[in-house]
Structure formats: structure tokens, C-alpha cells
Length: 366
Image 1 (spheres, helix red, strand yellow):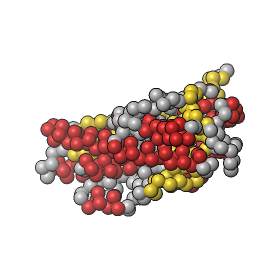
Image 2: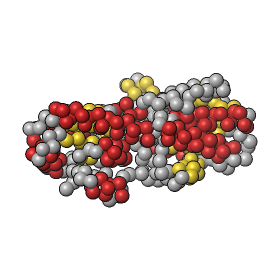
Image 3: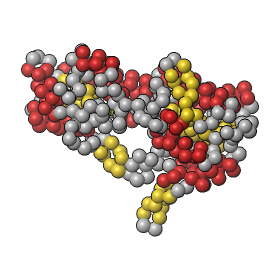
Image 4: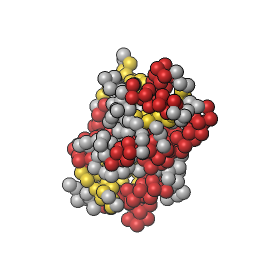
């Protein structure tokens, strides 16, 4: 561990955007600049910009008034893994190891520490760069809330609020037209948004990646509701949900992405099958990027600010190789290696799932 005094801190936002990123940037830059006289460098467009050498020093004006701003003032990308970097080759796209270029930029910019804000992919990359000699601190970000070693990531609360409001709105039109409404929400491998939004919005069926569902169970539930006078049903499905003995529905594969598999289409698949097998009129709404756009909730603004200020504390104390973490009510830190050791999945017999079942919600596995 280096004991060199930290004078220049780099920040990047990796992977998909989410509400609260700017609040983290502000939480890092404001105390670093104002209280400690540290220069803060913003790396543009995530690891892609890091490899390509794009950065700018941030000013106090840059971080003024951004706490409630969605997106990220630095830009981001999910296609810039330095260890598997896509480049134009003679026969199309070649994947090369550009980590040495990344380390060269880190040293050339005179950085004493990099604070990487991102999810599982960003933390895996950060661990590898740390092993190459970079001083790294991680800040957990993913609206899927699936990063291990932290109780919650910022951005999740905002996505949950948006999904819940959408379900509330679908209730009225589903009731008016006597339809089955399928709403597809984000959640590749972990169904936290679908579970909690479905419970908060009163969904009749919730389909999660962690609980493979049976088609007959889904059909039976919507038919039962229709025949007993409830002439509509709400199905909330995570994008990574799948029927038992079937594969995950994939929209496309893109080798440029950190995770090449792009999920999407399960909502349409469920709606088609319900209509085909039950004869009930069914519509589908895919929330997609709406869940990660716009202003963060008050909770996410506060959590993001706490994460940012804690990251600065770790940097100034030269406690590198750590990721900021929420443990209970306290913001602390854990080794990045611990953070990526496991995904935070929905416990299939956890308290929230049991509560949902107790109020009559189906998970399609009965």
C-alpha cells in the first residue's frame, strides 16, 4: 500500500448510467477540492475514455447544482473493458488487452488514486487494475441492487419508485379494458426491482430470475382472476426471468460490451403465451431505460453523497483496494475482492418473498 500523499484523484463512472451518479461525483469533488486542496480529474466516458486518454480537470463550477441531476456529467460506457477492449481490425472487430495503455494514462495524468463508480463489471476491472499498481477505490452503483457486500446501491430506490408508479398507472387501464398487463422491468440476474415494485404496486404475478416459473401456473392464475370477477391481472417480470427448462430470452449479443449478452423480450414472450393459451387480451409495457433516467430520489441523493464523501476519506487515508459499502445504517468499506465474490440475489424463501406470497402474489412456481 502506497503512503504517498494524495494530491490528484481521478473519477470515472462505468457501465450503465443511473440516478445518483452526479451526487456521488459532487460528494467526492466538493470536499476534496474545498477541504483538502486536492485536484479532481474527471475521466470521460468510463473505462473507454480511460483507455483512449480522455479526461478533464473538474472545477467548482462543474459540480455546482448537480446533486439532483440524472445521468453523469462525465459520460459513461459499458463497452470499455481495458482487458477486452474492442478495436477495428482488418477483419472487423478485434478484442485486445489495452490495460497497459490505461496504466500509462493513469501515470501520465499524475493520478494518486482512482475512484471508480460502477457495478459488478466495474469492480472486476478495478480489482485487476489495482493488481497492476493503480490505487483504486470503488463506489457501488447498479439499479439492479445485485452487488455483493453492500446492503444497497444508489439508484435502486429511484428505479424502484419509477417501476412502482408505472404499475400503479397500469392498474387503471388494465381495469378499464379488462386486460392482462405485463410490465417488464430491469433485473438481469437479480430480481430486486421486480420483487419490490411488484409487491408495492400490488402485482398479481411476479416473475424473477431466481425462481423459474411454470407456464401453467401463470395461465391458471390469470384465468382464476378472470372467472371470479377480477377481470384484469398485472404481471411484473424481471428481464432475466425464465420459465423452467427454458433459456433466458436474449435480445442480442454484442462482443463490444463488458457483458456481451443484452437481455430483453421476456415481457413480449409472456404476453404472447398468455394470449395464446388463455384467450385473454394481453398487453406489455417495457420500462427499459426509463428506470435509470431522470432525477434521483431523496434517499438516493443522500446515499450517493455519503458514498462519495466516504470514498474521499478512504483515498486520503491511502486505504486502497476498498469499496464503499452500506452495512445496516452505516457507510463503511470492504475489500473490492469481497464485493465481487458473489452476486446479491433475491433469497427465494426470504422475508419479502414470503410477505408477497402471504398477500396472494404468485411467483409462477406453484
